Image 1 (tube, rainbow, N blue to C red):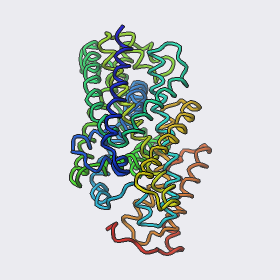
Image 2: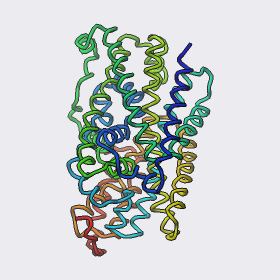
Image 3: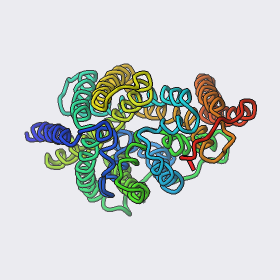
Image 4: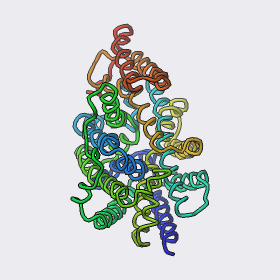
Length: 465
């Protein structure tokens, strides 16, 4: 009786907060990086929200229930590893460079052409990520509003996210991330406690779990080992050269905040992401019939059919929070790259006000592209996997090579991006025991090493040291 009104009220509050945040946006930097003024608490929840979305709550819970720990290596474990790697090796160095976008690094290190090529590889990688969140929201709407077509839900979600991202930018994303993280924690904690109580406690859950649920290492075969390794590196390394992670990192008010926020977010993610896994496993044991059909609908159906209205309000509030947090940041990131690294070089005389307006228009463009992709391909896990793989095979190698190897040249970086991506694309359509990401990554590494000797290094700016 009160579920739908409460959900609508929650959405209205979220939009209102986003609109209020627009009062803080005076410059393009405010829109892109929240004025680089976020405290540790907000910076940490913003980083946490980078990935904690539909895949974690809907996708990972179903994968864990069906395949055990081996089914959730990418999320949450590879995500946590990514945050730790960034904190230990990259956060301090990148923050000191004072960049607006990740692709600005390519400009400083490799030149203008490399900057634009990297931007063209980065922007499309977000379409699938944003689309996955829109599809997840549409699935919720289908559960709440019987008979609503999936594409209608996708369009509605897109409009919601666009509104507060367009108006408030990174300020809206950061403020809503902080509040939504609180809702996520409360909602999932209560549902986890209820499911453990229903099954008889954590020890009973462990005892009744299928035999191989907690197996963490693959079978000792080449195929299984390579697939396992690919699951680890696709998200842990492929997510490093991404604008949404970089943007949230750079929004911290100091270098110390930027570094510490990665470790705080890693711990937060590991703890909170464990709750959907527990809920999913308990659901499989108590209500195995819910595993039939679309596994992405398992948890929404569980909550609607087997919990009180109060729990339903908390769960759907938490789920919507997770999706909106991820979608807004993922929509903003490529919009900033598109305006800063693709459009701005062609219009060097843009005023700050004009640049801000351009960023907002780019948000609309990204939203339209992601909406179309979500309607045409509504498989959440596939959309997420493709997005991370693009970053790994195209951007990761020239980024790391630029930091650790002075001989890495601009021409070599461009060739590495192009050939790494092209090889991955071809390998994705060929049946092989070697995952396509390894083939693409191997080609990217080989290319930048060989091409750097064939096309010697240009001048390296000292700001990277």
